[in-house]
Image 1: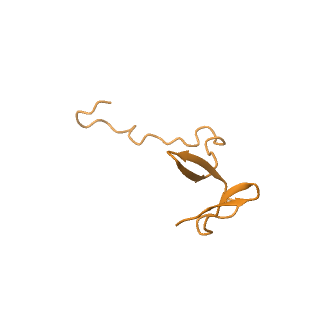
Image 2: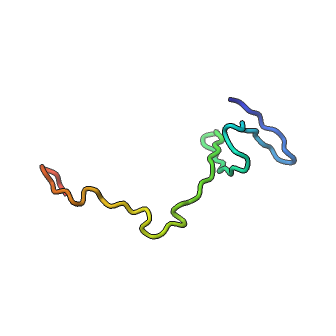
Image 3: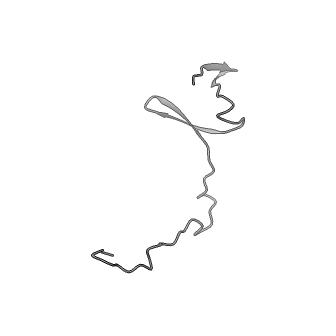
Length: 71
């Protein structure tokens, strides 16, 4: 898949195929080793999380060692 940089008003833009993105999608733009990377912006879930919301109990907390494990 290829595209060209085009003049859009006083800016430059890249046209992306409609099947890849929807209108209004916001992107973060990065330059990595000379490559332009567009990454869709996502909500920072940790910023609005309740305390303990992402806590997951340790599934091995109730297991007794059965061999030469060091706990």
